[in-house]
Picture (cartoon, rainbow, N blue to C red):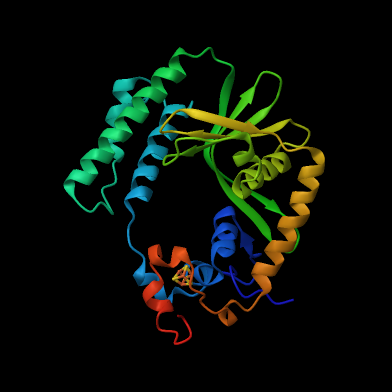
Length: 261
Ligand code: SF4
């Protein structure tokens, strides 16, 4: 079996991540241009929503990091926000000012709610990459935050900066959240595991804990899918027009194909 992608050195196993899987499932050609074939990489443009989300993640990382004693109050959080702000991808100063104001409100509310809640869990770690060797490939994922509860439960918390709502079903059907639970279960065998999505714009959240059967099925399915992604000749894939193409940076590259309608 010859792997065509993600092998940056002879000794290194190919890797798969939630981002790679979701990109592949959305469009295999986009996966190729993003992870395998860098000839169209120059078409990638900065996105305001990535800048906004990355800024909030950086500030929340510092706020919840028990090893970072410098960002614990609202004033310190807002100072960290100003320092961390990424301005790439905004179309105008007005658009950026509006986003900046929204981010400030989100952070002020998050800090107020966190500090007013009784402490039920301690943060085990923030922004850490976990790896799970699944034989022919390695599953990797970067977890925003993992909280540890008194009963031993480990909860991975994923921040969504663009979302207003979230349901338990959203969490249970989210490939990334299932990958994070699998990675956590592998690192901490025997511990109860749960995943939570926190919709930052509304502070609403929902959680889901996979059963043993779901873990087994998911690991089997993800292995099958990963092997398929990592072994297929991705250059054979043809670009197929779909609604997401209008918002895709690689559209000019796909338009070079005479069969791309
Ligand atoms: S333009 Fe469409 S077909 Fe081409 S990479 Fe983007 S999503 Fe895929």
